Image 1: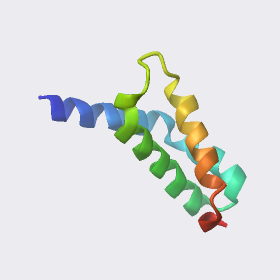
Image 2 (image 1 turned 60 degrees about the horizontal axis):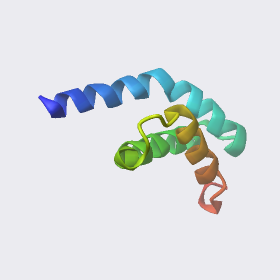
Image 3 (image 1 turned 90 degrees about the horizontal axis):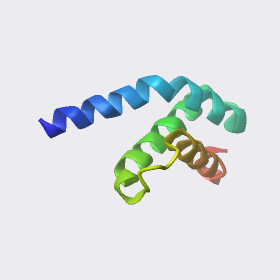
Image 4 (image 1 turned 135 degrees about the vertical axis):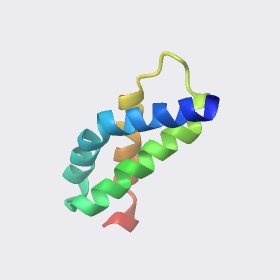
Length: 77
């Protein structure tokens, strides 16, 4: 089923990169709980918009860029 395949793909992406994304976010916000929220928010943003990206897109770089942008928003200060 397509739904199960998508869930598996998201879970794989999450498990492969979550700790890296959280560490990256933490360098900007200095709070591990907020960093985890930002990392998850960025993963979700990518997942919801992945159909708009070129197939050759660098997914980790896209998500890291999203983390950087979200970290700059004052609500996380």
